[in-house]
Image 1: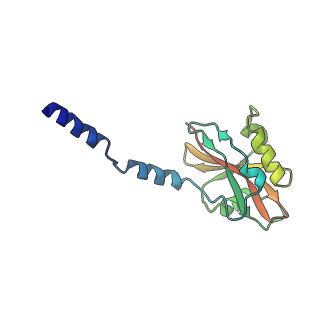
Image 2: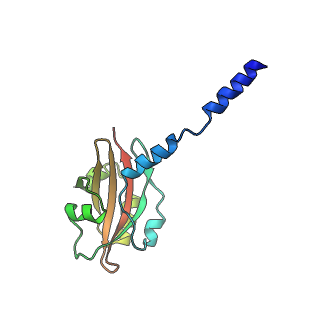
Image 3: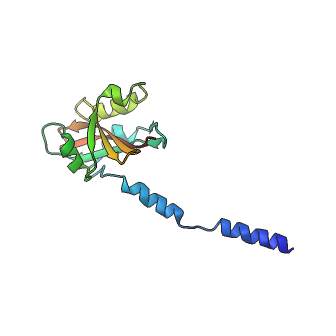
Length: 152
């Protein structure tokens, strides 16, 4: 009997919540940036695709107010998303060399002005966010999709 009770006690202790999941989720949030402050266009809400990396995260809608006539520069985009991380731009071929994100690019082109621009927001050496965005002149906003990536 005592060995069964000891084993059950061990199992109960092993299954107790240690609070590690709360720490993990707060760490994940530290790399996130602002993505929505205005209505999200319908074509972007329908996309159900994942960005392939060590984490395989889903693409999420982006819709940010922007009064500029042109797509924001890297510095302007940094301010727009409310983050001071390094921002760089990628060409379509560099972002999608295998052609696996055509649905993402098409949705962004449809929601915006027909052109997509890709911003990479660096979060240290192994984490990044990819923003695939276009300009919605009528709605005065930058619209698109973003995904988080873990790249080792």
